[in-house]
Image (cartoon, rainbow over all chains, first blue to last red; front, side, top):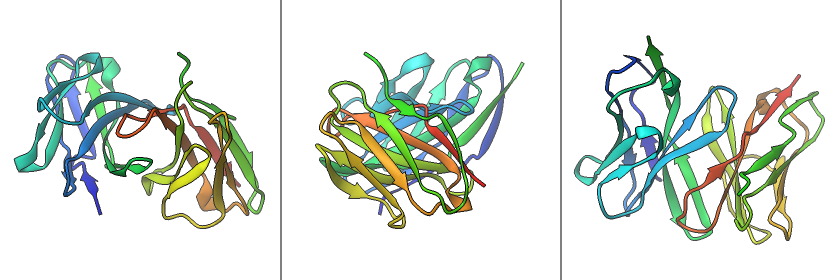
Length: 115
Length: 112
């Protein structure tokens, strides 16, 4: 069974500092990977996705992620964090085929931004 | 294009009652999935519907059921509510596989 691991439960960074959130996946076939962000009491917003091709993918809000097959990782990065980036971030992989597919989520990383 | 909508946004029920949650997908999306989010268990997959048929099911008891209508709108039902069913229930839609899923704002269910 596939699994997604986010090793960091909580991260605090200063506004303007760089950010890297870690994600490791376990899946035998080519993974489809996603990063979502959730503000308190809200649904999930898609930041970016990786299906194939270029291993560095760009997303919304200045985020990017790099897929590294050798390390089974899909880490999320941002060069300069803004106070509005404070939220919970979820890494997810899509498993299954066709219409019988589902997202498996990591446990999330809560990002706190200090001014 | 309008996003995924869920109604109601908040719900308070008593243990033993049943509840129905509704989800309207993005126009043109035929797949609807449901997820439960709790602080202890995180985000867990409930089921997925495509063209009115349940295509995949997570590891939840039979008290959790759903259906999808011909217009792709979906409903989720939980019977005989338990305190542990208190959660944020999220609906997501997608155009197909392996396209990304877009989530609604969720329904916050509180069981007392």
